[in-house]
Length: 344
Figure 1 (cartoon, rainbow, N blue to C red):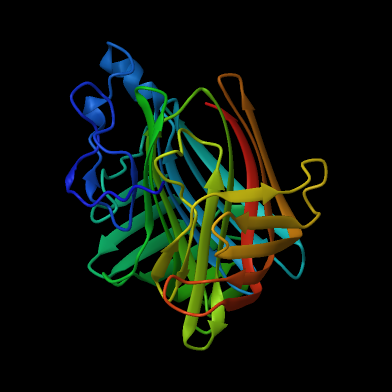
Figure 2: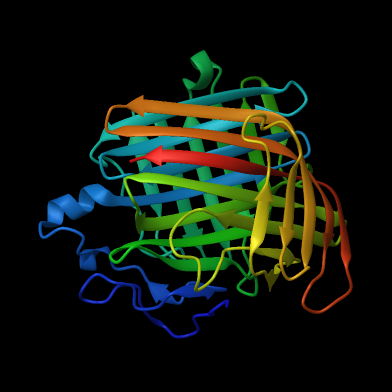
């Protein structure tokens, strides 16, 4: 069963449980973290809240990402740039204790993020029909420097996948993923400058708020690309977090219109992430093969906080069937698939 939430309401009831469980195409539930009731003391609840805005920008040549997150114990801001041709990655992270400097909005529909630390500023700005991502990091990668001034187009008509997922009784995951948003603007890294519109860049937003189990594990797969000059394709697949009996986050998008999927199997070899991954939905609407060509491995071990992610980048090939339309062939769409363990 895929239960679609259509009513406007608050996310949490007074007792800290979810008011509605399932999915929606837009944010219809208002995140209200003041109602979290995991512990009787408010400061303890705040330490368990995990919040993030993750932007990923995909081109045929490279991938660029910028994230601002508050994981309760710390504010974590990180940026990375992957050159697909050179098979290289540069990544920098800033941590501040107890979320200092992080103030994330309670809705993705409006509200801005402004982070400043030393010579680094990261600004995410929401405006009608668009999002602005500005990153200024002069000391990035031993002083090579990174600068991004990007405008993302997000029409009101564009669908997204929004999940209200219970994790036990009073833990939850409230998340929105938006794929294949057109991008314009410039990205500069070191001596190289990139015109994102000319490169056909597409943006993905992962907007997450919630209270997770201390030990968590999940899989996530995502892609954004052009099927032709007039058609964009995006997909979002996931499993491993919470009770997905109400809905899964599995779906794909053709020109911003979503086709919802039921269950999707992740078939991969955890002993060799570079082998092809296979995805198939039980409703027959999606069959994809993901062939990795680059691995981003990120490990963190800070006593209380520990994480390990294997984020594989590669190409998706296969077939999808939209709700309204004939089968669509997918060939060579750039994206990623990951395995993630977190103790946080």
